Length: 167
Image 1 (cartoon, helix red, strand yellow):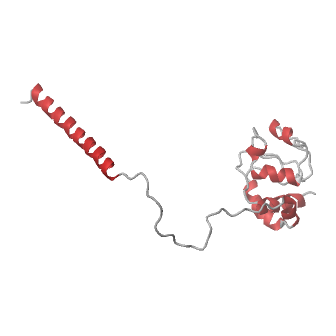
Image 2: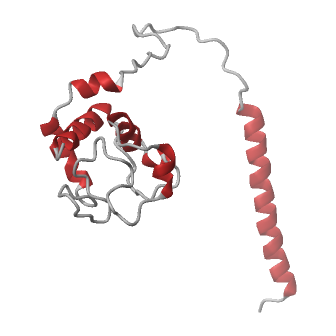
Image 3: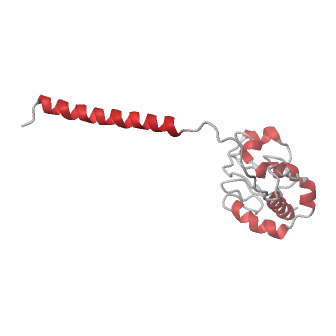
């Protein structure tokens, strides 16, 4: 029923159809492709400039001075999965009792990464702010798996709450 010549004709017709399709696509692109659109004929004024607005960098000390410890207590719920507030009670991470002003690595917690000791000696509010913003960026190689708190007010509130615990 089917011989070699029939299969050859079928294959040739498929290749021919593909060739016609590709040549048609190429011809259509050449006919309808426009390199440039030229100048805009009419500009609609939206009232805003296209210039980027400057972001005002707020000093952490100013934000920390106005921090709310009770708001920090709500933020600490994220930390409580790995950290405890009771003195000497370590969990996945070291306890955070009296962490503000404490020397880095002084809790007796056995799994401190050496990366923290290389970047800071004492957990000052500024060091905690930098660490909580981006743990892996501030202390490359740290074993803390948290991505960080992006909002400076949240970090200040959390540090104010931690400062009120055991301080």
